[in-house]
Length: 370
Image 1 (cartoon, one colour):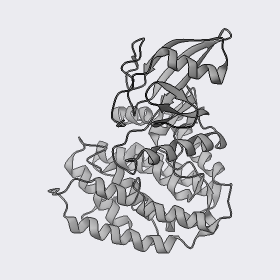
Image 2 (image 1 turned 60 degrees about the horizontal axis):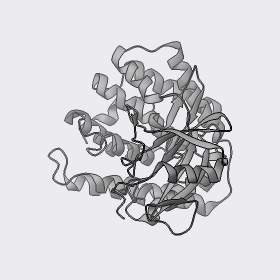
Image 3 (image 1 turned 180 degrees about the horizontal axis):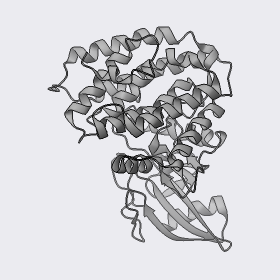
């Protein structure tokens, strides 16, 4: 069964599975595909496909509950094999509930022969079941700021709450030199990270030559050897802390989603994953780094450095910013991005790797032509 296929999942099969988790007094009341516009799925669930999250609402013992069932697509970035996707989902189930404020995982299971759901065993594809959390993704806040050109007191408070959150979870250290070295190695070589992003760029781009990417990859290998000695920095991390993985409710109350790539790693991973977006939004709004997004960037960084005292991080963020820069410059992830913005982001990726200390006060210089 190809992961790109559609699963003929019946409501009975779904109910039978949920009964194993919640008990016999259970009735499924609705299933919706979660997207920008949530769509109802027909009663026989014929539209159920791999790679999409589904909201499932049911009643048990008179109480309404909602959970999310999600699978993974197979297209690239190291998810090609069934075992790749299984590895990720099994890890997520084991790790989600260990991180403060993370959405809770309920179970990990598998589809067998497209006819029944089992918790484990012979299977064709794995899925993860998590609790459903209400809220609005943080990127919606950034979209609104880009539209109005203004920030509110709540925008500042939310920015600080995210910075505080990272400072807090990064307090927890782990003594495992080999694990830190693996984390640094995967930063460069993993299919979801630098080399995987480089391989996803289409050939024959008119605005950048193949030699640009070759030089970039070689620079990143050099950074790997520079970073791998810093094993004392191994810390609890989220791993993919960006605005599409943070769900805000009222005020500064939020939940994080989709923790990735290990329970422990380099704190620079989380900080750059979020702050690259302030640069990205500013470039799209102004063509340079200035204004409200510059303010949020500095607010986040200043608070994080004050709370942690981790000035060493400025000598380690370079390859992480390169990775995140490759994401936001990607024709795959952002196909409609203006060419001049994409070029500035690629300049940023190249230039940031040439500096031993990241300069928080001279960001615009990194966007200049190489």
